[in-house]
Image (cartoon, helix red, strand yellow):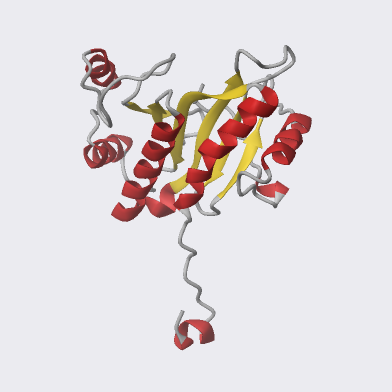
Amino acid sequence: MGLLDTLLGRTKPVRPNLDSLFALPSAAVTLQSAAGLVLSGRAGVCWMPPAGQSAADVQKEISQLLDIPDDPTAAGQATAEGTSPGGSGGAGGGAKAGLLTQAEDAFGYRWLLLDDSDVEDLVNRVHLVNSLLAENGWGPQLLCSVFGVVPGGDADTTARPFYLVYLFKRGTFYPFAPVGKERRDNELELRVRSLLGSDLPVEPDLTRWFPLWDLPVR
């Protein structure tokens, strides 16, 4: 930041540390070994459409940028044929590698949804989507990336699913455990924080642990 910026009170935005995402595979190992929890193989990148631009234009621009079809039906058909956008090849387990679709939640936020049962591949693809959008001027619209976590075969019967939320502008994670209609399990979230504190850069400011109701990641 230059002297003029300092005198005028201007500050440059902090460059997001997307490399923090690469800590997630190690955290996934901790979750599985300590609690029998596994990543669901599904993730989403959340962003707010810019004001003054139609939803159709935004969707088309994002689709062209990331080389995905505008029509979710076409995306599904491409995946079924083994030529899904955003990737290639198959993955073991329930989630199919390569599927990349768009969705909108009840609050008007847009989501890019990714499926890949390989944790490292999923993280790499989420990193790539964030990087491409940021490099093409969409950084101010990017809010967070969300990864689903579910009980695995070795989990306790009381284990509950939750999400790990990556804050794009902070480079930090926090757990979000919704239960029922706009309610969350704060006790579970704090337990996850204690469990993963040495593996992930956990967001220290609890006021930034925003609830993400109605998110389309499962």
